Image (cartoon, rainbow, N blue to C red; front, side):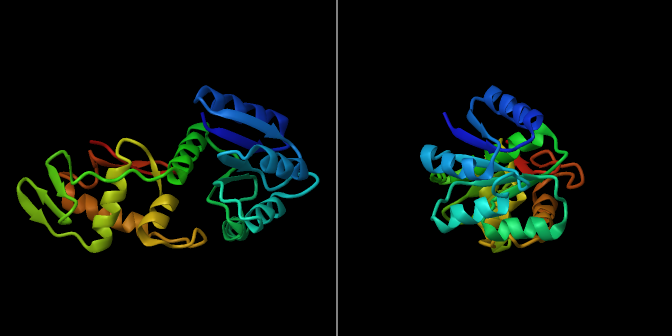
Length: 226
């Protein structure tokens, strides 16, 4: 069972987040003060931190900075009412892995939590071959065929496809794809993922505008449907 610490001073919001995470099978602790939260992380070593920026005692930016300076690598999902671009970028530069701006949908939050925990887990080896629909992939040779015909993919298009294949059936966030495929720092804001997904759909889907396999999960990322 994965342990999640929710560092949030809004009692109603913290209760709602905790309740929904526990329904999904996570063990959840809630702390309302920044300094107390930092001590809880040091003592309990959670698998993931859901972090509000506006906290009494010690704000979320300072908590995040302290964690990273101590060398703690647990994934951090910033949960904040601050929607300004500068605040988001500052949090990402300090070491946050993703963020959700209040008000948010609980399904979006749960999907992002799942994606961050999956990204932090040891990566399973890919099989030698994979397939979905009428697409067949030889991973070792980096060859993709559709209906028996070779499909030419750019190197990053192939890497993106492999990232989706590895997580088939589950949501992969844009940030996760940016990090795993391009190796960009999480502070980079770009449409690169969307552009490459559009190209994969054009080459591998019957109707790119209404894809059956490489589907969009609104506000989160993408999912490969076998």
